[in-house]
Length: 409
Image 1 (cartoon, rainbow, N blue to C red):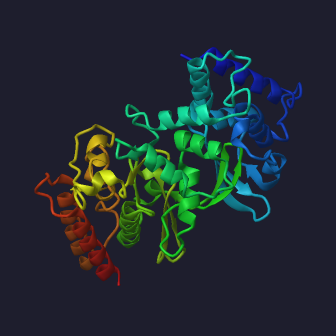
Image 2: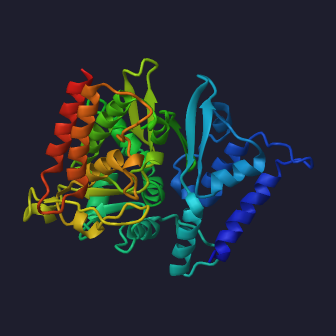
């Protein structure tokens, strides 16, 4: 059920936008700037230390779209990712609107209901401008143990310290309220900022180019993984190698935080293949559903070095895991399992839909066929083993990297 407060904000924004539409319904010249203005002036002015230069949005980014109403719907519905280009370089880029399904409006209404604030006085800041109560409310929402979507902090017990340690990794000049809201609605821009600092050991993610309100621009990194399922085995092996390396990198993490991606599927992985097919780049492009495990937490002192071993859970068309089990240990092989499954089969257990399937339409040399058989043997062990009888999945994947490297070279 949508609250009256949500209707109020949505209707008010529509009224502003309609000012820019002529009677002939021509395309408005500053749609993206209008969205930015709504975010920074109405939705959460407390989230911005300085008024964003929203007018630069349309000057920097050109949105590729069809008509005005389709674009409005795309920006504000749950599938809020759109293609476009950076005007000056004429290079492809991706725009994401973080506030999917009006999550911020709903959070604000809940906050106002808790504090018995009327619709006219419904805002994050108290009468004296203090934001302490609002920040505490958002922290509690982030750390709600009943929540299973979005950003989850582990361990579940005493994880407020982990949340604040994570927020402390960012620049002191950042707006703390914006960062808190981002952790709650979509942590991706914060992760991209954090990962960008570690170029010597990079993560497989896009680059964060610009932020306008609650819209972000990311570098375009290629086509979805599904596009490459029909490519020659050599190319798919190269992609598989990068996916395995990415699984290790996210699990290793930084600053004691390990990042477990709970929605690894062909739509959330993009690939760029060079013209000669000798080099590939892989990037994970949907990082809003992620478990952040603080491996430095004092809770893990008693079970230091122990690892959660994931077991395949039957779930038709979905990826199932037990969140409590992951949060109970200092490390998990969840990323490694999910990568094995992506290479072997789809979420319904169909081998023909895995990246390293055998393509009967493409002839491969005996060497590649033999390598594929060995890889499949390793993948079946990785996906279908039953704890505690699983061989260490990191060893399985390292063996796979060795096989791929020897075959290709």
